[in-house]
Image (cartoon, rainbow, N blue to C red; front, side, top):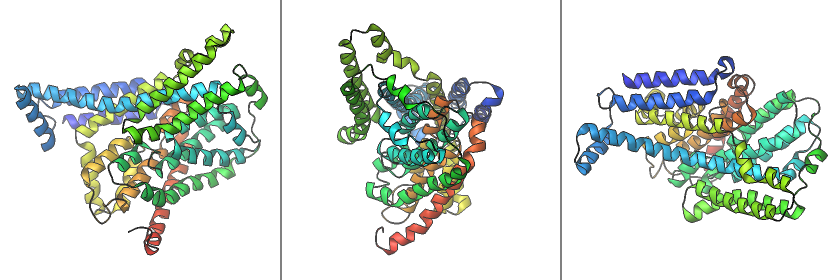
Length: 467
């Protein structure tokens, strides 16, 4: 009973988010309300027996009873609090990483650090800009991550395209390219990182087998958009932007750029060396970059320069609406995970499809456009243990397709991926506009990538490249 109400709250809240442009109600308070209501229902429903617990959850509560020598009701309260803290810690890792990356990008951009990207993209032709931006985003996303890359490219896009409608189209393309690029790299997306760390994927396996499908998922939308992009760009003149960033010397700007971008590149290395969460690396890079900027400012005598270039002022530019929306939606999805809704959904898929891995992962990818792909992938990892041979072995069909589908499938809706949520907040793109103009392109690319994988897999096997 309570589980059904939680699902209903999620569906109603999701509908309000989807219809934000029409209702004029900001998505952030809706997400926060969803979070609070769902967790309250979850906490109330368990003691009353209106929510069925799994055997593992019951065992955890019984362990609390024995360890704390308390009654069943108190143990349930303690368990629910632990679950909330567990999910909150995972969510905060993403939020802290996001805030750190946004600040680093803002610091570098404020000092002209991304001018080189703009120089490479600079062109009067909309079509040329589309192709250049798509593939630069694609490969940057694989090296950095789709979230950080989206932030960088949106910052650059703002300097290149002044027309709002044109900028929305390019921003939609950035989402497609960032998610496609993140899918074929073990460090390009949260879901691929999860699968890579847990041993479902190897570095060589994911690069070899998911690269071409990811290329196809971006190539098809680009070809279609090529015929929609006509004419030249009416943007900000290059000279105006360069002149606005001459307060720091060229040497100082280069140092800021190297510390910022080099630091972002260093974060995956830092994680692999220390095995700490990525947000620790982001905080390290932010601390070093912030200190460098403070040292440069301390040498200046221009007090106006010091006030406008201080990092403390740049922190005010972080979009807290996006941060709070991210917090609310991820914590809401966490209740669906703990109530067993996601697990039940996966089991139902198994039964309906007859354990067809293409169908299961295809539907999971489509579902990741609605529900965050992280808990979906986490649920799949729990449902399907790694086997020694077959489709569920390391680099098996199921895990390869899951990495592709969960990464690229989120592009079909603007709130289906971290990159989409960030771009939505930065450019204020409505859910309806994206659904009308970009979603069908994302679907075409998504299906094309699955077809490419189905064709290439037996070919790779015949040449002995894979088992």
